[in-house]
Structures are given as structure tokens and as C-alpha cells.
Image 1 (cartoon, rainbow, N blue to C red):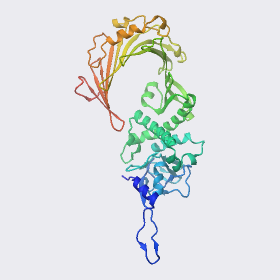
Image 2: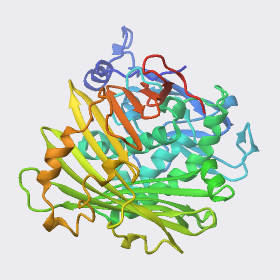
Image 3: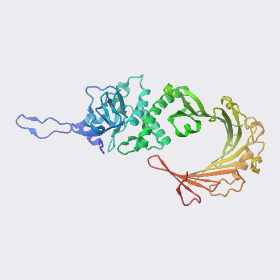
Length: 485
């Protein structure tokens, strides 16, 4: 594995003192010419392995290869190598590395390239020491392509040059955050580690990563464009967009190789979660069918200043495989007491809808399930408990007046809930004495999360250093083994 080593000492030496030299030439009474120190940087161009591609460092940030910018050509197995001078090496962390793949280049998987294209490796945006920068591939390219779109209408040479990125702390932080957002979405959704993203997945014979790379490139490019548009529509909101293919969705909804889009919007008390099917024939920019839409609104409830309760109402839309829809929803009243968070949740039964457009108009005067939720901390660890009741349990009718909470706010007193909910069996190690239809308790400690359920099963999830997770199961909370399907 090739690495690029760049130290502050080397930079200071080269920039301040010129570093180099040798013995003087006594016959000419002139010093030997200064030979610049160089830094070796090697890597691979991967789609399949690509030979005959030009790799170059975009020092001035204009997105074009200029005569004074260092370049090299990839060889067999996609190998390329640079010898950077100290001045050039200074810019490696703050400049994009591009690959221009011309017609006639060779893709060892697909053969001769018949349509020119370009790939890229994003800048690290921090001094590089003992950091590996090897593989330029569709996975590394799409990250930078998405960032670059944001600045497409501006003066790229000024904004994205090496010197500008070194000097502009705010811009550097902004681009770094965008790169992290894209990378984290990829890690979390596909359970693909950052190491796999930058790895030589051909050498590793990682067929799953290779296949995902081809799909992810298309999805991430479109997702970034749509996220940018939504951020303009909701300027003060946190917006997330994911575009992907899913065998599970295809099977359930009876589609063939469809593309799907998930959006999440947190907009000052309004939250939107939506999954749609996109039209593949329209560059994944047009919605073909809404599959789920969950819209929640949160507001203060009543005028109590001691517990300041919040009311959260959510209206859900679900598409059936046959094409018609179900509407459902719930209301959630939230308050805090003694640093613990308590919730009363009422869920309404689903009702049929032709196209789902009327789901947002639901009411909460007829509920079929109620649950109590409690979140708390002990010794720095986080805990959560949820107890569920249907009409067959006595607890379901315990508080009959606590329904349609927005409508009945004037006749209800939060003190009734404040006195009652802390008395239930909510601690993680408490035996549940109430008759429930179902319960679930969770304990989070560092990278470990343990869940236990009313059916006697336990599940442990450990987050690994690379962002992936390892899940095991148990029937006693002591002995954990691989989970069955």
C-alpha cells in the first residue's frame, strides 16, 4: 500500500528555508543547484481497473487541467504514480485529484472506453501525514461531484483553489461537513464501511461493494441535487435525502428494479418522512408513486408552566402492493418530571383511502392502542421503556378521557398524568406487573445497545469502529449468539 507522508517540519523547511543543496562548486564559486525534495504518491484508477487515463491535481480549482498542474497516466491494473515537489505536496490535501478517462482507454472489466468520462478524489481538507490516498473510483468521485455542484455557478478558480481552501476556514469546514454527511449516509444505509468505500474492491474481490458502487453513484448524485432543492424550499430545516434500489421494496410493492427516494425533513416543529418510487426514465427526478408519508406536527399543549407539556400528532400514509392506501396516525403527549421524560401515546385504527390524499385529515377520538413511554438516565447510560395496551387489557381503559388531546386540552389536567405515569414499572430491571399486549425496554451504554422484549428475547447491537454494527441475540440476557432469520 502506498502512502503520502507530509509533515509540518518538511513544509516549514521547504517554504521558509528552501531545504536542499550540497557542497559548493569551488571551480565556479557557485553553489550547486537546489534539488527540490519530492513526495511519492501512488494509487489506482478503478471502475474496473483503467489504464490510459490521465490523473492530475487541480491546484487552481478551475476543474480544468492546466499546463503547470502535475499529471501522470495510469498504467496496467490502473496503477499511477506522482513525484510531487514540496510546493505541490502542500496542495495535495486542499485540491481535488481528477482522472480524465479518454476514448481508447482500457477498462479491464469492460474493454475499450467508447465514451470519455471523468472521476475524482475529494480533498482531505487537512494536513496529511501517514494517510493513504490510493483509489480513485466512482465511490470517491460522487462525493466530490455533489459538493462541486453547489459552487458550479460561482468562480471556482477563486473559491475552490488550493490557496483559497487553505486560507478560508469557514469554506473548508462547510465542504468537510458535506463530505461527512454523504459518507455517513452511505455507511449507515448500506452498512458499508468508509474503508470499503476507499478500498480496492477489485483486489479484495468484494463483489458486493463493487455492485453497490455502481448503484450508489447514480443514487447519490441525484440525491444531492434533490436535497439542494429541498433546502431551498425549507431554508431553516434539516434535510436528508437518499435515493437507492431495494430488492425488499421491489418484492413488497411488486416493482421491477425500481428506484426509491427517502426524504427526512425537520422543520421547526414539522417533521416529514417520505418514501416514494421514482421514474427511472426521468433521471430519477419525478415521483411515480408515494409509498409512505409520515407527517408530524409538534406544539405546546395547554398553559402549564411547570411541566410544559408538548403535543405531537402524526398522520401516516401507506401504499398497499395493490395500489390503494391506508391512513393511520397517533397523538403523543410529552412531559418531564425529575429529569425523566414520560409520554402518553394514543394510536388510531387504520382506514382505507383511494389515493392517500385525505390521510392528513385524521382525528383521534377513536383509539385502538395506547402506550406509555419513559426515557431516563442512570450512571451516564440511557434507558427507554415502552408498554403497550389493547382493549383486552384493563390498563387500556385506565384514563378514558385522555383522547383527542388537542380538542380536549381545556378539560384535561396534566397533573393527573404527572402523578400516575412515574408509578409504572419502567426501570430496565423492573418486572412488568401491568398486563400488557407487548413491552420493550432498551439500555444504551457507549457503543452497546441491549433490547429486551416481552416475548423473552434479547438483542445486543455493538457499533464497530468503522461505523458498521454487529448484532447478536439471547433468550436470557447473558449468553448471546448469532440471531436467527
